[in-house]
Length: 281
Image (cartoon, rainbow, N blue to C red; front, side):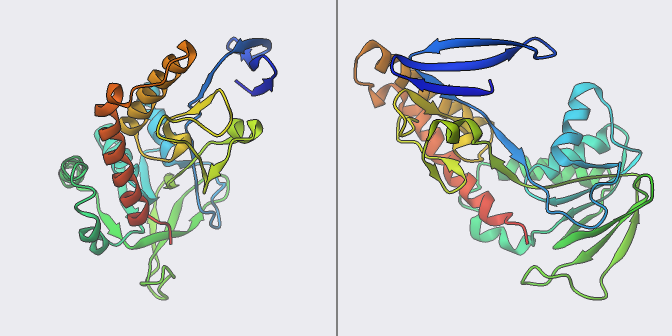
């Protein structure tokens, strides 16, 4: 889908078909549910465009797409929960993970422990796998430079102070042929903005039914705020029930999606805590 237009009789969805996406099609719809996901963000640093530097999500997609790895010796760096499965996945695939470089300080975790209680067992499992594969973990560190001419040969990392600034004299060189780096995600809101949907910060604003402020348009998943698969599924369930009821001309019954609403509430609380925990320096 590349465009959605409002018309007097409803909405028109324009899409491109086929593997080469050369054939266009226009579909009429009484309602549209936007589930456009999110995209990774990377804070730039000298050398960040060198061949061998990929996003953390890109490295994960390479693994899932056919056990292809970005290199033989990889540094995983940045901030956010995605770094853990990427580092453990690469190590399990036989890659030497030279280091997991996380800019967040672990001392910040206790203040968010209650909100993240449901996530802690998963994180503990990743931590155990990192230990098993002997992956060094550098917390409160960041990549300050990537080295190489035609492709990556190593990265310089340094410690951060309490204000997120590089501490002079703490730089060290980590030889590697690949760097998987990411600093979290942002909602993908292009289609929503084209339709005139109101944003709440970086995310599409929705009500309790996942409706936007544009008639006939709902939104769910990462477009309404980065929060993971369980939250996206809950929001999609609520949106689907709301759409079905509204198209029948009846008022939706919130009791019909009460379990999903509880999952959504927990997911949004955890997402807010993760965002606060992993705010890039």
